[in-house]
Image 1: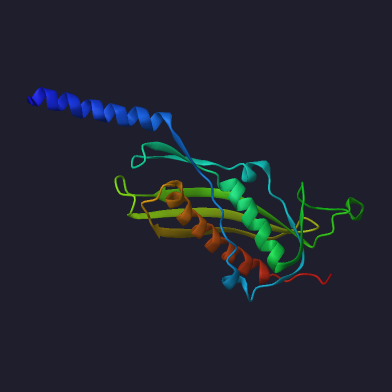
Image 2 (image 1 turned 60 degrees about the vertical axis):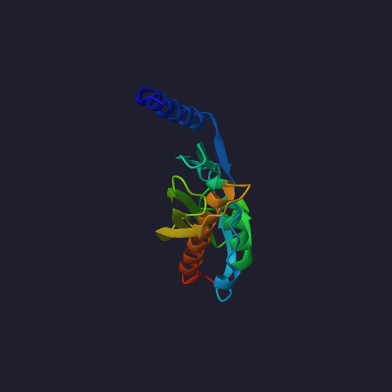
Length: 204
């Protein structure tokens, strides 16, 4: 094959890859598990309100994967909402989803001691450009604000956590991308619970 022909084939392969990458999107759905072992000794013995705004619940992060020749779309908001809700249902006295931040008046009928407001402030991922069986990593960052029912800020902190998983040659490649993100989320929620459990609360 002539050198010109080889160059033409290389260019065509490259352009095909770019076109395919632009045409497909891999939806990354996550189901982070509540880290039960790490939370065994942690308790928040009060009624907790969770304020999760539409930006948090609908948060998506988008990137690209040369290895899969596709775009990546991480549904981080839905996964984070489930993780926060399930975690605080496990460690607190009870959980109420609230639609606004405090202060609350007695006539509002919102029976909580504190309100937790989470935000996703950063996400990143890394993977091999050619190998599915290489390491996949992810990092997530949450900003969490905790209020008392009068609206006073009890906690305002950034939580950052990482996850790393060895990829598998699987028929569902999205799971390789989801796994480290799920680990990072679980690590972060442990740090959040740990800090909130150390706060001083009024007796109910």
